[in-house]
Length: 200
Image 1: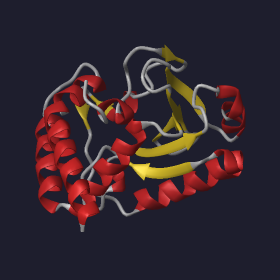
Image 2: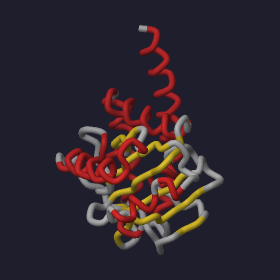
Image 3: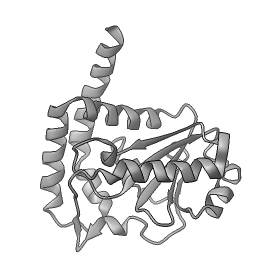
Image 4: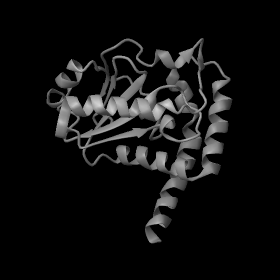
């Protein structure tokens, strides 16, 4: 499984607190893609405010990631938030206050970067939690930045997503796995793009 697939579509089978938390992203076995929606950044800012109000300076960083964070990119209408805390494995340090704010833990993956996923009270979202210094958090931001900067990369990624959205899937993770090749290809390009940017 490639990086980025699980953060946006987690289902590796570790501790699950909710039943089928990704079900809203499959409709009759198909992935529902929406055209880029100007409300997605607004929804991110709304949730960012809610999370920061709940946790204060325990939030080391909070970013809008995933396809809804890339202007002009078709996406599942599910906003991905990437939160970095000191130690994502230390759930008592942040989870109770997030639960008071209406969030619920749906997936805990101790064997994969101590990744946690929460759902929100009203918006269809994935709140991904990683520890400070986690390389997967860096990859998620890099993928977003590269797709934002490169129209050709966006078009190629969109074409694959549209093709896959026409197929029927038993699980959302099957759709994610089918994107692995294009994700890995784009990540390699993104690493080269970042290296060139740093030289300039």
